[in-house]
Image (cartoon, rainbow, N blue to C red; front, side, top):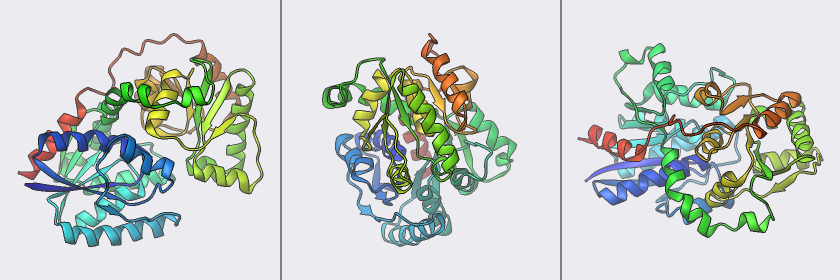
Length: 360
């Protein structure tokens, strides 16, 4: 039986891996070894995902976190290389754009192991973002580039990837499979709406965690002041990323909107289903909002998911307080048609078949 090593380290990767790992197990044609780098180490951002989504427990947990980008990526590279020598896989699967993604891809490339990059071809065209560096470099050394959209394919073509020794395919977004599969389960198992005494369409779901926002106090304050203004009209609920919480505490910044601990996937799904709309700087949450038929106000200067903006499902406002509040009011009263299929269907099965094809 052929073997793959899947490298995971952050919340969106756990969600995507849950879909593919279940399909791999059901088909029984691939032996999967899961490696958790530890990049997201908070129990509510890591352990709970494996438990409630029934993802097989990682065979390796590297527990690498709380370091600079260089130190973290380098240490991950070193440890992943060691375990690849032990496991001797036929391919390494990486997701998205984290330090874990780049470290896993580099370790595999140095050992001439095939690399599968799920969510390839995305670009923000902002090389100041660590994520942009990670995904661009990972794409360049991957053997199988599985793209979620036509735009992702076009990005790779513009960068000359048709001249490289790799296979490029559009397969859609695997996160859509996760939302569809776990929607019923989340309704049965999550109590967060009751616990927080929330009412359908009477609260805004917000998340802010990217370094471009959290490390710039002027930007962070502008975004949070906008959320504070919105909170006077509609309750704002924010699962607070550990990095954001630490910065708020360090600078003694206090706000009145509702801040809660990070939540598991089922709780997040229920919040997404029942909120009025989403305000976030998360790439994954932009799509999860769309999958749950909710608009998203994007608190960044750009987005990789440009089709959401093009079709009117999202708006980029950066850290501009006035733009944020205006976008909230515009979307709050919008009656958009979310029936358009932007991200495919049956994505996990397609990815499984493509992985099998390169293992032959």
